[in-house]
Image (cartoon, rainbow, N blue to C red; front, side, top):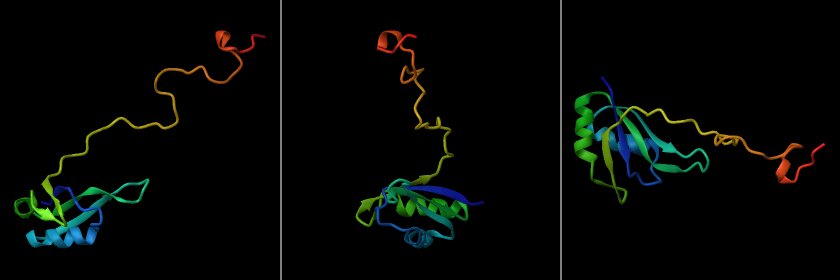
Length: 113
């Protein structure tokens, strides 16, 4: 069964192909992905590698965790499932109502008709 690994501390210039090539030294790589920031389009400095077996995954952890890769020290361990996080809502709201706009506003200088 395939096992997914978290790979942190990647140089920001690392590509998916370079990550896959490096980890293929430890066995068969099912997938390798460098995580990219949606806003800037730049690497976030971490990624995920899926190895084809538990044994190959452990071999990759032993080979790469704490080792230098492109001038940076890698952190490699078994990936944990993504935690549920509250959804961000950039449209405002969230902290109760606001008294902006409209015609009312009593003590805020609004007209009372």
